[in-house]
Length: 348
Ligand SMILES: NC(=O)c1ccc[n+]([C@@H]2O[C@H](COP(=O)([O-])OP(=O)(O)OC[C@H]3O[C@@H](n4cnc5c(N)ncnc54)[C@H](O)[C@@H]3O)[C@@H](O)[C@H]2O)c1
Image 1 (cartoon, helix red, strand yellow):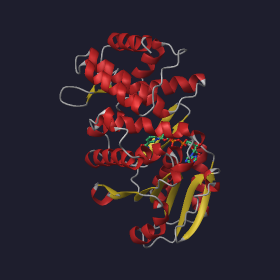
Image 2 (cartoon, rainbow, N blue to C red; image 1 turned 180 degrees about the horizontal axis):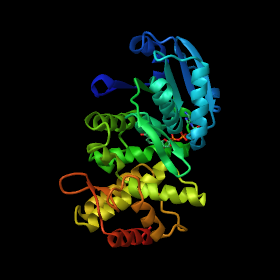
Image 3 (tube, rainbow, N blue to C red; image 1 turned 90 degrees about the horizontal axis):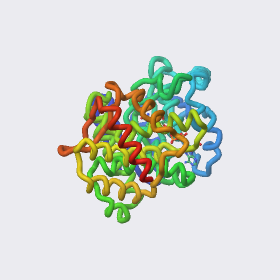
Image 4 (cartoon, protein in one colour; image 1 turned 30 degrees about the horizontal axis):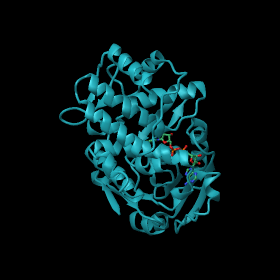
């Protein structure tokens, strides 16, 4: 299936199919006929996977970085940029990312800045990168001061979502992506009872479709795109404390907790009734994402971290369901948030 992202001259397609990675050379010939070379940015582990048969059809250089978040640093970005220059990539050439969200973000940012911006095609290899990181053009790295604090908007020329590639993912990495899928499921108003009858390919398409549609309407997060942060205010706070206390938790697990908390906050603010809370719990359970906030985290620290969320312009800001659909609700009373969070934790 091909899903379009409509952004005028920056429009592109997300191709979802088994073996999509093999379309790379054909796509480069079609979209970038003057390209003579490309640099594939991937990881030291992924390059040895049996599916790693990436063929661009033009001169091809491979740059490998370490797996995971540690590569999203200013140092590694510098190394990648130097290697793009050593390969003598010109403005007509391109970067191809082959990896999870960390590599997508890093390679995309390198492409955004090298020669003031060259083309990038993403081949996302985790579920999270397929449904989220590779779509929408947000690229970036972490600073010592925090995650994703340096970056750019740089739309890819195409995204190749290959379901053969994600077959080698560890279960916790699948869960990490499923948190975002559950979020999309709820934003689309789908019921828990429909989950079992939906194939993995259909789940992928639902999530990609939603993100592609929202990005097409709101490229730079002025409005609708903020709805994609449903469940993320608490999730980001949990992830911040996990990092500080070396507690392992994957993004999707934190998002799943954030979704169940957000709907309870909406109930406390009389935006929804208890049936919506029960349905949200059933959806989260339907994706096998029943996780709890680690006991050692203090509620006051979580509330403090939520009020420092990058997206919180007015102290405590949440995406919440309501009578007329989902919306961004700013300036929520700290005492209400603390009380609802305490109750939520006590019932876990
Ligand atoms: N730009 C955006 O819009 C956006 C959106 C969401 C997340 N992100 C970013 O994405 C990152 C998280 O991405 P992630 O969850 O994909 O984690 P990740 O990129 O760190 O990958 C997780 C692990 O899975 C391994 N892996 C990747 N593909 C594999 C495969 N096919 N088989 C086996 N192992 C594989 C990786 O080597 C790594 O060890 C974060 O840095 C986050 O900030 C960005």
